[in-house]
Amino acid sequence: MSLSATRLPGVVAVAQAGGTTWEVGFVTPDDIDVDRGTIDLPGSARVLPRTNELTPFGIMALATHLERVRDGEKCFSPRSTAFSASVSACQALSSVLRKAHLAHLPNVRIDSIRAWAGRRAYDAHGIEAAARLLGCRSLDTALRIVGAGR
Image 1 (cartoon, rainbow, N blue to C red):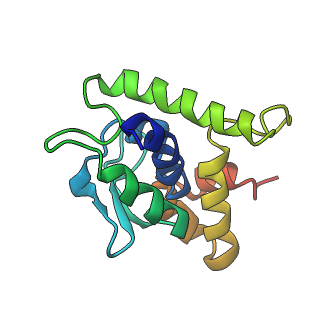
Image 2 (image 1 turned 45 degrees about the vertical axis):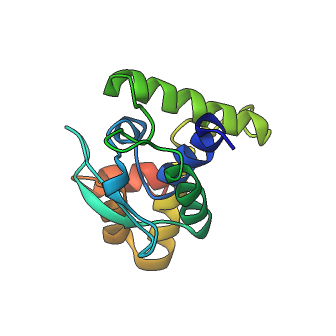
C-alpha cells in the first residue's frame, strides 16, 4: 500500500480526533502515539493545542500511514506548505463525504467529522470536554460546532 493510499484514512483519523484541516498540515510522526492511542494537535490562531485520543479506526489508520512516512517529514504534507496541506485535507475530507454518499446532505460540511467528535465528547462528558477536544477558546464556539446551541 502506498503513502497516498494511506493518506486519506489518516486525514479522517485526525478529524475524528478533533483536528482541524489546518492542523493536519502540521502533524508529524512524533505527534502520534499509536501505543497510547493519542495525537498531539498543534493548534492555530483560533484553536488551542491539545492532546486527544484516537478512535480505534484512527489508531489503525495512522499506524499504517506512519509506516510509509519518511523520517523528518510531516505526516500529510511532506513537500508542501501548511496552507496547501490544509487545502489538500479539505479535498480529502470532501472525497470521503462523497464516497460515503453524505456530501449532498444540507448540513454535512468538511468539518462534520470533527463536529461529530465534539458531539460525542459533549454527549458523554458535557460541553467542557467537547471544548477541550475541539481546542475551542469559548464554550459558545464549542456549542455551535457540536450543534447543541440550536
